[in-house]
Length: 118
Image (cartoon, rainbow, N blue to C red):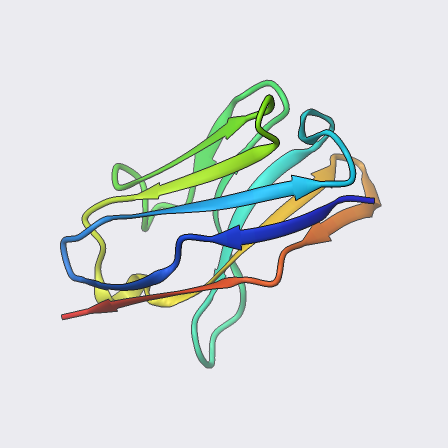
């Protein structure tokens, strides 16, 4: 089992930047594909960005060109660099770890709040 702890959220003005971190413990991060999801009030949780064990990435259309996901397996940490933030990026951001094809090995962090003011 792996435990995930997100950090780096906060309040920022539109156009600003934040970097979220997701620190893993219990298992080595290199075992897992990683992703960031977000959930705004009254909306479903949505995928923001994902990175495979090999380092391939994909992004939601709404964040392409603004957000960058990366992983540092030596530090057991995944990052989400968020630039040019918009008020519609306001949400709770969650880190997910999973082993592809084995749904029983899917883990979530507790979330970190990101608020973008206009």
